[in-house]
Image (cartoon, rainbow over all chains, first blue to last red):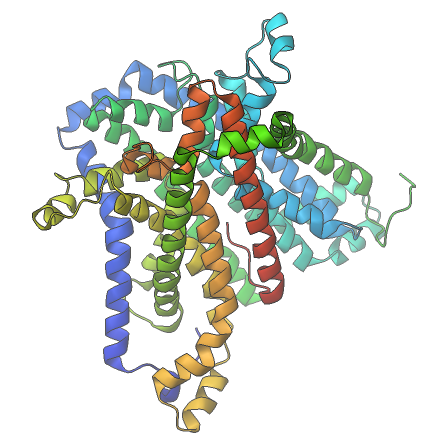
Length: 279
Length: 276
């Protein structure tokens, strides 16, 4: 916070009014909907909630959600580290174009992110006939949902790491190399400790989106209960069946995931901020 | 790896760049290219016929119109919230600061059913509006609320770093020269926020145009009335109208690319921090 003199401070009534407006807006748009999720989830009592959460279809949706995240998040994390090493540690032509291309999936509608995989692997897609001959199914099955999730969460880790590694420069790596460390040792002992918080930060954001993604996954999912529904899709099914209590019970699990992500994110920002002040 | 290594003695350039390009190509570029390959198979005439229907036109008007309004509303309230968070100290400021990212962290489907239940005629807020005959859920105002919800963090997070780095010396100078607080804000502070404000608003707009999960529950989804573009793509897919879906997707991708170029240009001009 910058030091404020009287001349740069707003009058008290302005401050009170603006803070009031901001709090009011955030309350109506963020806090009330969040509170409603939990209120609706527990409206019919703890037993209905527990039944909804432990129902077989819910459990299989949770299992599929975890599976999809467990495959797609590590893939994008490895990509993020590789891409940021190439982009931050070396200079080459076309770097800014490459940076824009990495951000591309954020600009694409989730529905289109799902559709592209249907055009490739769907029954009438490019590889459709070949897949049918070999009795393989990608669309309307878990592999398609993983691909759609990978596409949607593609930039998360890379975009956290690239600016940080660019700011850190190469001096420490040079020092390690000149002291006789191998490339791999340099990466593991010097680079990785320097980027660990940003990496973790990128991974939790990537994971939150991977577990919560709806549009892209919805296009490639077969919507078969207990088989190809992730938790967000299961919420949709329950909601459309007017089973509001169960829908909100499942939604509350996803909300807790979201809140946990926010808490971790805030914690890391606080950690990293603290470090920045020390240096 | 003794190949020509540009200005660095660090190892692993070829490996990391090669891996990056291969993965990017396989996972992002090739699939996106497929949309245009499929669309070009339709020919200009086919694309025109698929897009030039009253249903598509209505969806375009609804999606783009409401996204512009949502972007502007986010601009106003985002500026207000960013200002309050960076300039004032008050109890709960840190809590508010963290909660701004809630729309990023909450799965869109959860936001969708929560907003719908809230604004439905028998919901917490919907029942308050009912006596005044204001219909929000299953009507365009409901879509607008969902779009404002998901777009808000973009504006706040783009403006915050600019406001934090702002030199208060300029405001002091302005005050010394006799300007009122409002004059200082309007003539000195605000003009310097404009580039970041436009960037944030454009980001919110771009997100709103493609948004699906938080909108689809509250929209009502009446063809020609409350049917947004992403939903129309899904509807066409479900009717096995692959041509129509591909043509629409290609159009939306072109819009996304143009917006991405605009945003990149704005960000390079303002050097504001990227926001997710």
